[in-house]
Image (cartoon, rainbow, N blue to C red; front, side, top):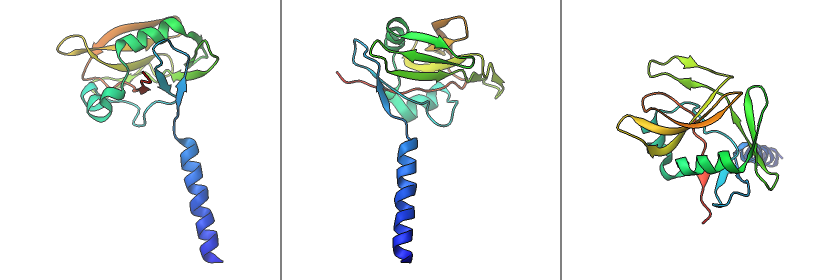
Length: 154
């Protein structure tokens, strides 16, 4: 009896862990890019650490541009719901960023996400947003930004 209860508990814990994992979402983008439903754990990564850990799974600046142009963005007070033309959506939280001195800035008001594309020796293309705008800009590599992974289907 104890073995059966233990087995049931292990099964329930496994199912719970699996249900909390982020999935990839098809937003109906022309490129076929799928976007992960949640940010990577750890919240803030330097560019070097993000590239070392996630590499080719990080979006390119072209994928950010496509996401911005082909989806509807709805501000919800502290995040954007990004909806594709097929009705599927992801949520990008405005978790701010961590300065290279360790200070958190703009938490709850702005979001900053790494791309995989450098744009100079100490800068990288990023997706950044606030309540009034969504932009693709550049940012210093030593700060800590969020990471949202993608999967290419083509």
